[in-house]
Length: 421
Image (cartoon, rainbow, N blue to C red):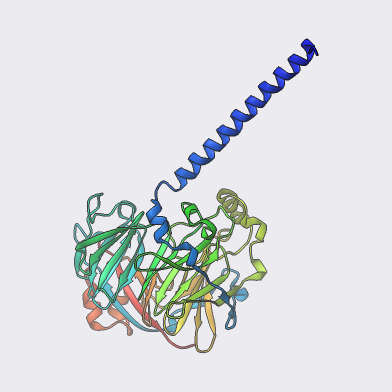
């Protein structure tokens, strides 16, 4: 049986098309393999195996003790009487030397002996002072052993009396006075961390860089032992491109609180029982930004919030033994709203502007940290500080500590307690 030239041309054309598709499929398969290999190239098989992901527990979120915080009354520009809330003030001036000069303060970490300042020096540095503010050491900047380069977060291990710094992809361990001890490479990426008695709690922003976690890559809370075996995970990520770098999402002051980017919920993690609970839900529904605007790009989000009177919560939170403090953002009015809550009574006080007697206290209403029952704020010294001589709250000893400070000196830390309200 003969085959026509037309049929031969059809067969030849079909074979060539099939060859092209086969080559295309091989190319796609090759690129996929390379991409997958690149995703996991930062981690060895041994590191991934050490995570023990097959035995990791997924935490259920418990909602049996939720406290709703109604913030709708604070959704406007308003002044609140902050001065009448202040019960006690302690001043700690941070010694000024050539080595101790501070850039923008990102985090204040206080222990019984020392104060650790994580500042914005060359992208992230640590300056150590004793508990009276005397300069001890700035950990050197650089890429050598124990030096810092693009620091991400810090915490203190009370059990081992060690300062721990996160500098991707390593945890760096120092003595309490800042002497380098060792480092450990981490088998995953994250944003914040805190130390618990038997391990660590890590908080990521999204799944980027953690594709090797497989079915657990969507979870943003990771609890591990000291060898980074992933014991449990929780809080799956949201499909968003909006992030606010430089903020914390883990807060430890006796208890551990966890927040997320652009959600209205504050969680509590209990390490002893490995539980994750919803502790507070913020209600600002009257002017809450619609959900659809949380799915746009970061630049679109900034444009929308700049031109519309919306409130949103980016995760900033602090608490003492007696009070909570919540922060809401509003780009339209160009101010931040702060709301204090008394834990015992549930009463709220807050607004966009704090009213206080400048002869009594410095401008401290928006705290940066907390320690025990103290909130911690800071102010830049000035020769014009009239409250130094007239205040009935600040002790004579503290007035002497800051006497003579000028604008070029380091900030003064202010530890303050609030009254019950």
